Length: 199
Length: 192
Image 1 (cartoon, rainbow over the protein chains, first blue to last red):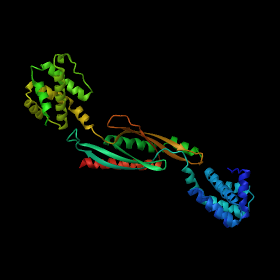
Image 2 (cartoon, rainbow over the protein chains, first blue to last red; image 1 turned 180 degrees about the vertical axis):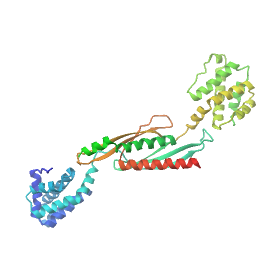
Image 3 (cartoon, chains in turn orange, blue; image 1 turned 135 degrees about the vertical axis):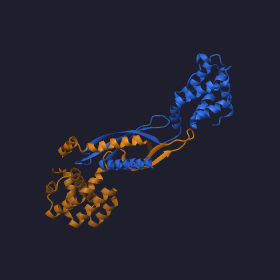
Image 4 (cartoon, chains in turn blue, purple; image 1 turned 60 degrees about the vertical axis):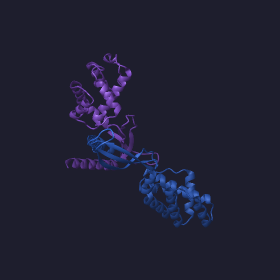
């Protein structure tokens, strides 16, 4: 699958042909840094002074590169498809090789950054447990009531929340049985067939 | 077992055959257990009609207090009988009280055991397995994911919203592993 680049995008990337390969590498580093931590316009101004061009040009160059890398990573395009995509830009062989390397080196990280953007439900983080026996209460003396206290840690909207729960031994065994069935389901022929065929 | 002066007074009135006939006594005893175990009970039984409502209320409160205290200390029949004897109960009424108490003891224990605060109680789990394919941000993002719902119940019997969360296969394995550890430890603890 080839990436279709808009004319505007091509024009922005065109700036990369006017600078040395070390500058392109630097742009790549900046692009990755911005993906990790967010953009910082001051860097554009600094680079613009050094290269004696407008800071808009630098911004377009870096953003063009960022977009090229994120789109390619999003679609998980192959090495060959990436090369063919860049070929259309008419860059030198050296520059093409540099861009390919940039893509291959950072694809995994970019995909993990992109995966954080997906819509998410509160998700499991970890579980702590404690065994208790209730021995007495104000309203009933001499009890023997086993209980399993659970502290469930969940990730929710980027922060962690905890819930304190309790259950009895019989329910605990029931929960384990149900959850093992859930895990086992993934190994059934039905699920395997679906997973094999969705590619 | 120790009861307040007021409760003892109520029991003594309940013991008087002149005030409470055998049928009135039985009706009040039934009402006392019913009001504890199955919600408010009316004191409008025909056998109770001729008794002063204030006395009825007083004796009803005394009987329920006695039942709750006996339940709380898991008193045996003998202990209850000797206490009632001190309140001038005759043999027949003592026996009636104890029989009724034995009959309802288990329910009473469950009821008294459930009084008080405790964390949300997990009663069941539902799960759903899905296979993620792509998002608007990320294609070819193939991985299985589980959606879990823990059904919970609270001691104050107000209904609680169920607890929902998602987890990956690895996270579910982690969860099951930890629950199994807990179950194993529980089994070991019961064998001590």
